[in-house]
Length: 152
Image (cartoon, rainbow, N blue to C red; front, side):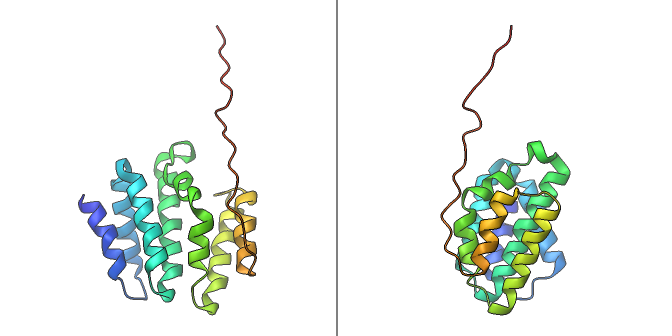
């Protein structure tokens, strides 16, 4: 639970957020992997409730946690990325309440995610469209577990 306390401390952060603080939050999130749903919820809540100038650092925390999780556990075992996806539309709507000058930083992260294959383009494109003021409905996720083939 110490790891979660570190994450809760994000709420009181003042900009700019140091690289050391970002790494500390990321490490805490990874350590609390068994509570990953809570970790994601805390980060989403931070992005929703923080001051406008902390929105982009909140996105950097999402990016850092997802990349570290994929690096440490592999893409197949990363639980953070899929969990953040559940509320991505809402999270990005909250992110875009940042100062106008920061919107290009959000687009830059989305471009990096596209380039590095972190998330599929069908997920990234609507989030980029939001930067231009588009109102985006939440993505419809297909249930990939609809058919189970058993061979004997």
